[in-house]
Amino acid sequence: MKDTEYNGWTNYATWRVNLEMFDGRDTEGEQVTADDCDEYAKTVVDDGIGESLALDYAYAFLDQVNWHEIAKHLNEQ
Image 1 (spheres, helix red, strand yellow):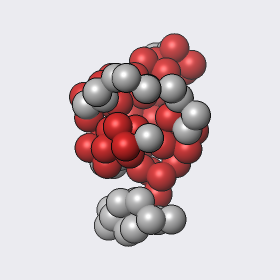
Image 2: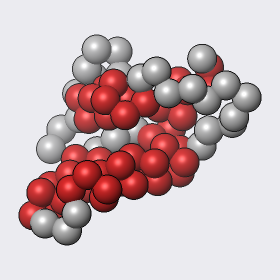
Image 3: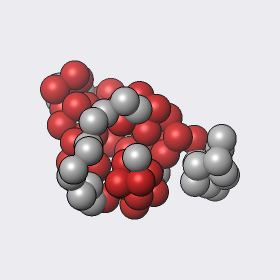
Image 4: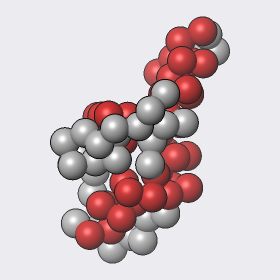
């Protein structure tokens, strides 16, 4: 699948995950890493879906996310 810039973000997956999972999240005073963002998103997905085919699809979507871009954005807020 070809990644294409979306709304100023690396791709649609990065934009959408940032919008749905991180928009408005208070990280003031924290230094957030790409791994922190990835782990947080997977925890949200795990808690919301549980083991199923949908979980596999959700993880495939999360694999497309540019976690470094989201961490940078959170750290600049």
